[in-house]
Image 1 (cartoon, helix red, strand yellow):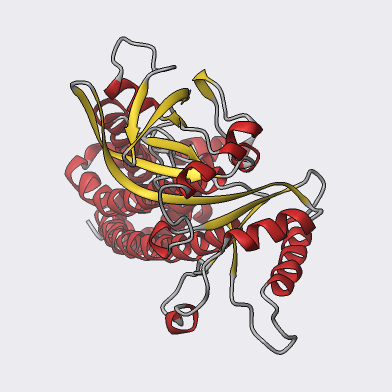
Image 2 (cartoon, rainbow, N blue to C red):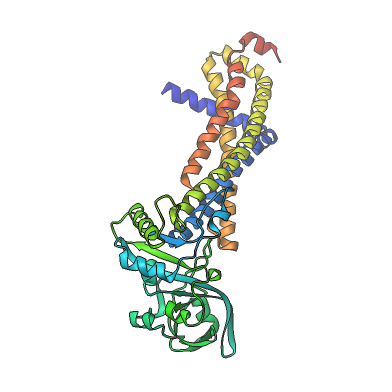
Amino acid sequence: MIFFKLFAESFVFAFSALRENKLRTFLSLLGVTIGIMTILVVFSAVDTFRGKLQESVDRLGSNTIYIQKWPWQFGGNYPWWKYMNRPQPSIRDFNKLQNRISAANGIAYEIGIGNRLIKYQSNSVEGAQLAAASHDYYKTRVFDFDQGRYFTEAESRAGSAIAIIGSDIAEGLFPNQTPIGKVISVLGRKVTVIGVFKKEGEDMLGVSSDKTILLPLNFARNVIDVEAERYGPHITVKGREGVSLDELESELQGIMRSVRRLSPGQEDNFALNKSTILTAGLDQMFAIVNFAGAFIGGFSILVGGFGIANIMFVSVRERTHIIGIQKSLGAKNYFILLQFLIESVILCLMGGVIGLSVVYLLAFISKIFFDLIIVVDFGKVLLMFVLSTVIGLISGIIPAYRASRLDPVEAIRSK
């Protein structure tokens, strides 16, 4: 109880000193406020950006592997000359895989035909992304329908002149109309709309079906060369439930090496890409950004800490006479020490709270005016309080110790 009473008295003394010197208090807060705000802004921005990118990566599938010519890779050392002469995934590769693989729930051959201008009567949509895929596309991708349905197996096999369109395409071509059953021109051919994808919204990687027009692969084969490199052909394989990504990758590698007739000493001439490669790359990139933000913010806090230490030395000098009177009346050394330490910690905590308030204000503004939700993690808020307290203790310990060791007689004479 005595300790808590002394602590409360020290708090009152410290708060009174801060209130009496408002300008000094404000200048002391500034450095810590900027430092804390910088750290929280960087960490919050990184967490938000990281979350958005992770959502985009998750859309690619956590148990999905993409067989492609070019590997996904982060970093500066990318031996493109090694991959340039690799063959593109072919229909033959796809058929062989489909017949041999046992660990897959679905396997699809996909191409991206590119952006086209699509018209229906007087309405048009620019930048429509034409794509074509084999029947198992619905097993390898996650999507919902707003209207209509998916291709039947017979339609996919026959290469029927049908299409599924994205929500943006539907809104642009058929405002206030039902798209189902309408005929549009794609690749110079008439195709019938049988389905509309549910609106997803644009993500950070551009993975969205909103502007997509999906055609059966066998329909596209009658119009274009689906194995041409400019269409980016790739094979998407979705693993069965209970099959790990490593097992799926191992089986795919063995089958592809057999299909491509590679000897044991030859390198793979194909890439098995998966979302974990992107996740690892993102972790490396954001670790660097976090370090840079922490360094800049830490430097600002350090400058603020020096400022607070300087202010505390001034405060001790100005209150030397009062310290002498307190000690002559029986105040112990630890009471004086605690009084100045609390003042220093309060200064830092006030700076931290102001910095946190500015971050929350910026998050509120971004949500209202830019429709961007900034994530302020509770762990980072807790870190702010801990960091502010530590900086306060470090900045105030030497001035507080010197104040506690003053001789009462000399202190009283100092005035």
